[in-house]
Length: 249
Ligand code: PXP
Image (cartoon, rainbow, N blue to C red):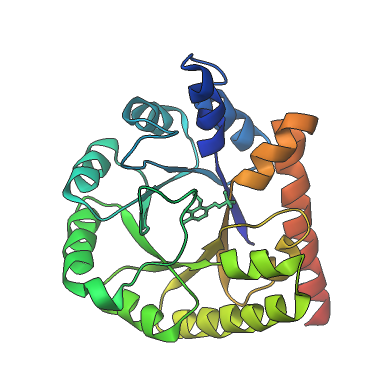
């Protein structure tokens, strides 16, 4: 069964727009879990533009399922992760000026630092995942770092989906190939970025997929229909995609 972790960063974005306390990302986390999400994802960015340190600590207290912390590989973030103790850390590249995480991590190019960070986090009992483009060299580098999970970046697939479907399907093939290699290397396969109510079905059928991380589309739909409905609608899409797969087998 494919798990859904809901990224609640943009609840904090709305809160921070007024510098007040509402809407509260903790309430969002609780509602997502009640609606059936497997867990909660948040990104603690260097500039703290949405989630802040206190949110991270509070999310640890309220989240009953999987708590997944996205962060850059910096000494400051490693220290915070060791204090927060999420169940899983997903290491992501981070640029201050970007609107959202733009590309995957260059694991092969930063092997030493990422391997050291992975070791520290795993020693504390935290699962480590690397957010990478669907590139087989990066999959193998993730295994070399002793991380146990990869999150395949679906952003390029998502960008093409409504504009040039052919290119989206080419990218889907790269995602499938990367998922197969990752599974073959003994890695758990997660995926995410840019997924919405139109484009998630194909990704939910990736081979050996364990978890999807979805944020913007769910929080966006919640504005109109409420968070409970937004989460349930996404879970329904994932379950339907899985049923079609079972039917094919
Ligand atoms: N996965 C990772 C590693 C991310 O950085 C993000 C964005 O924070 C997501 C998934 C969720 O992306 P989206 O908000 O587009 O669903």
